[in-house]
Figure 1 (cartoon, helix red, strand yellow):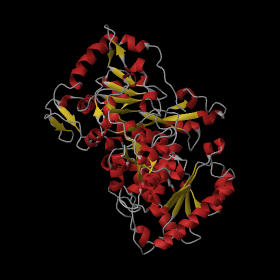
Figure 2 (cartoon, helix red, strand yellow):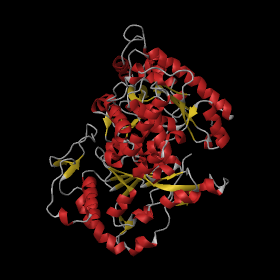
Figure 3 (cartoon, rainbow, N blue to C red):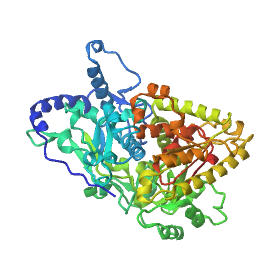
Figure 4 (cartoon, rainbow, N blue to C red):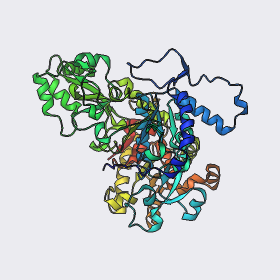
Length: 598
């Protein structure tokens, strides 16, 4: 459900600091609106129609300033942030839904980073998220992380009827959830608190629910102008039912469709229109007849069935051959990802696919928004529900692959999580005498409350998992001594252990990640041969990792990383946790035969 945000009245702190801010912002604006040397990330590629000035200094070619030695750590950091922002065309901001769990937030952030890269803007992400449970008593976790009432903090009544201890949440720095420093090596990304510090606004004023607080994050000068300048993309303008949002429109597509910079609905920020829209061939009519309601996209099975004529196009024709016919008949090939179980809940990027779109219903993110000159470009509301990963389609396999790289390798977990998961993998191997081991995600908790769990009965749920793990064991046995393959993703190398290590025995231990906390149910899992994270973690692990592992949501990241090492993985197709594991597995070179989401 879409949530509409409204700003509050202008804060007192903003008014008090107006005179100071005006002077600071003018000075800062001169350093970031385009004066001086331009910066650009080496790997932050732009649409083909974008050109860079000749005065480009690449971010990793840092230059020494003799005065830097006299600057404090905070001043050096602000200087670095200023340089980072100066290489782009301003900021890209979102309304972030902080009431959602981390894996939902993860793919929302991935989408924001993609949009910022396409528009050559610095993406602003939240400085924190909320952990929704603590592995110990509330006071223990509150000693290390700020505890809030989740409903109060996110302005939601969803949890009001739960026991008060289940209404609590803890603020977790975003840098605990993923390696922000690593992401910044390839993408222009800062946190909201970074933005506030750059504009001399207290970081304590960051909104608690994730929405972009216009009244606090911007001020008006004595002439009535907003600083920094702001342009908002209304939620309903982004991708209404009458068109499909793509990353950008390449030159050859522009020529085919007679793209003109004139036209477009300016009231919805549309720039340009198609002039060649008179296609009326038999193939065009057949394709339009199978367009689903609400999204003018034809799946590839329908494309093959309609376009194949047994001569020019057969069942073995390549994508390029089918694409040639589509282009002649007013359609274009677009690139996206297949969802699990016919849905797009998990939003992983492990299965790239093709679909077809009527050319005249295509609009590019770049074309509509790259010429906006405001320092802050804000996309209001949510754009993830019912959308594919990235919340848009791609016009080429290359641009799709670049986004896959962002998800699989640039948005990586922190080193502490990765190293702990490797140690737990070794312990699982040792439990089974060096044989391969299997894992499953057993989502209970809120899924049981909402009726979304695979099986309402706990024993029936486990029986379902064990049935699929038995199938997985047979799959691994059939692969032994054979050839390992990988998902169709960039830079993946086969995990040869899948075909060299012995497959599991029927009575081997298997790993279960679950949010179930009933002691009787947890004992039942162990009686049935399952191993839980609490059985594998040591006191040394806790001491080495530090306080964040007290929080269930951080521990869940460790469990995701652990399951990425499993020889076989099974989970619910409607859980974004499973999507995160699938991405990790693809990056590690796991074989597509070794996972099932249903």
